[in-house]
Length: 272
Image (cartoon, rainbow, N blue to C red; front, side):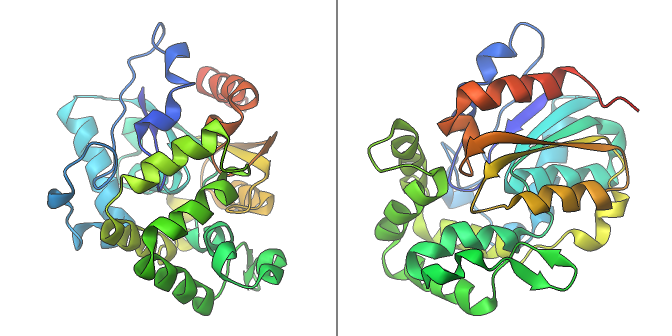
């Protein structure tokens, strides 16, 4: 099994509630994206990671280095898209992809990141274009990036509880804040710029491995309609399960709800 793989602002510790349930049955591989966790920020290649392809190449390199011939890949948030992208060039390496709070057009995640610094009335705006619901406009992104440039710690302090869906005193918010603060601000800004400029919608039909799409009922970063978009446009078999959980990191904030669902989708394949 490859993964689980974390999303923006976190590191592999975000899977601490899941991994113990897997160790008896699976070989589990976890790794941090460059710039996150314990990776050396001096080795962060701003050009390589200006697109999601850089992260997809890292994933494929890890699979090759470890001689993993087939895996169950679990990806959260942007890493769900990374796994889908990697599977296009090497579908043989992926038995299935389990996506948690992922999006093919990452602009849909702007709602979560922008709200502390933009007009709250924008919370109801999810329309990017006539065919896709789930994003914000360029001016909202510029407000986000400027907030990160001017005071990263203040931005992160506002972002963490909004993204988790809890107050600053909750254990999940404190844990997410810790991993956010561990990221060097210029790297965090670069990563978000890459995320928000990425769009896999035109190549979803090339993703042929089975995909299990898991989504929180209330996630300001990725609305439920995005999971249906995945389901309708992927090139292979897929299944959607919407969980009664809140927030964009439910594996951290609602483990009692989310972990059993993840385990079920890891263990069982889609019935065709």
